[in-house]
Length: 257
Image 1 (cartoon, rainbow, N blue to C red):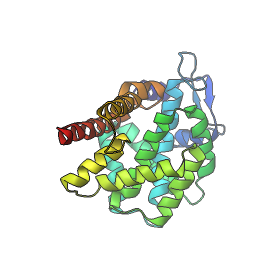
Image 2 (cartoon, rainbow, N blue to C red):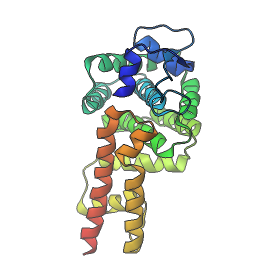
Image 3 (cartoon, rainbow, N blue to C red):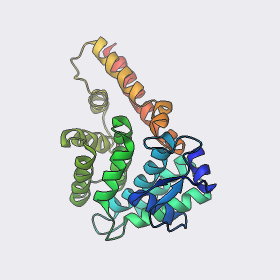
């Protein structure tokens, strides 16, 4: 939570401009014309710095969640509950929760600058692919919170993926996994999904399955994601992802015995 403490502490020096800085500043009750002032004197808030990316990730995550929830013209109770569940899993304090809710509401506005937000977010992430995938998975969970994917939500998610440099094929794969997680399944279907989570075929040699498992665990390791800019508060979400990968690998191993 170091990045948050430094923001709240009012350190000055570096300017996080653009729509992300402006929205976070407004959510904190500071209407900076050029964005939220952050210090780079202690390290971390310079371009690409861990704490600056964490601030950008937090801001983009909750504002775009609000935008997706409003995509079909109606923010459902399921979508609100999903957002609150994510906040609870992140164990946000009262001040962080208040800021997250304000960002979510900003995302619902008709004039929400989605393109500008995504352009800046991609720049701040500096091509950290695993970080961008985690961001997309959170947004997809918002869309699937009512157990279905509305066409308007799907179109926005395609647009988001395009802006962030993620192919539609990759996004369709994430859609498929999210839909599978949301639905009850037989053991046969669960094993099929396990192979899909690891990204290998059922005919792949044991060595290839193990290699895919290790690669995914390395990519999604919570400590590595935090070092790349995932807010510490979202580490539990990253842990849930690694647990999903581990369960998929264990299921495959058991089925092959």
